[in-house]
Image (cartoon, rainbow, N blue to C red):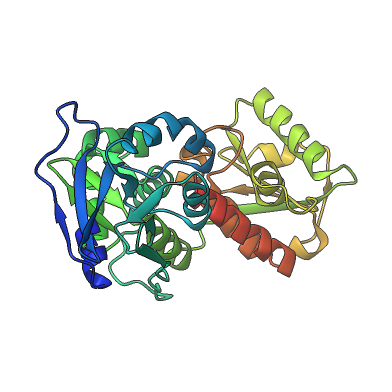
Length: 330
């Protein structure tokens, strides 16, 4: 939905003005007719919504826009936390999903459109480690600026990246913008990923430790470094580092080296029910390839959510929801 359609949906006549300021201060001017008077909006278009922490830095821009009209920020998706922060900072805003909070003389549009439901089994969703890598990156970034760059980051060929993007586009999860730019519907793509992801656990080893989960992670990482093994932390510990919500009680570490399990000074457990440490050599290499962008020791947030859901418990499911919200507002 574009901004004009937004006004049309509430029976307010609006038109794009042709007298854009010479200094190109706004991306567009939109005039809305209310009670025989025109309310002018100075529109600023963003390729992504600002993070809540970035909004104070937009104040000089908002003040300049206010000299020609009501500042109106438009982005592909504005999350609830970002929407609240924009409104508090005296921005009007709207996104392409139909979410909006527009305030001006005689105008008040406020709505939040529910996310589209995603079926548990999404037919046609591409599968395999390379596909999962691409989806994890799109969920984080929202935008792919070129298939070649996306393919390199995901560790796949460019033709394969093109195939995956086409399949995701057919499923309504991404859309092409321009010649080489792809934009993801991040909330819907995330739900589709979580609902359709195969259990990619490979070979698991279970242990019991009297140390804290964080200490157990440090021990595993140290042994992994001595073996030149690749390790990444997920589950409880990663969740606590991303969005502190509950004290970690369980250790989940992925690695690419089978030898690591035999080198740990931990008590072997008979199975997962007797363990508080799990070491996994995954079949899905995207777990090791695509990590949290700011801390490479941690798994990608999508994997953390999956592991919290797998480990179970009401508090873990609540933690998973917190991470989902955090991920989509970054």
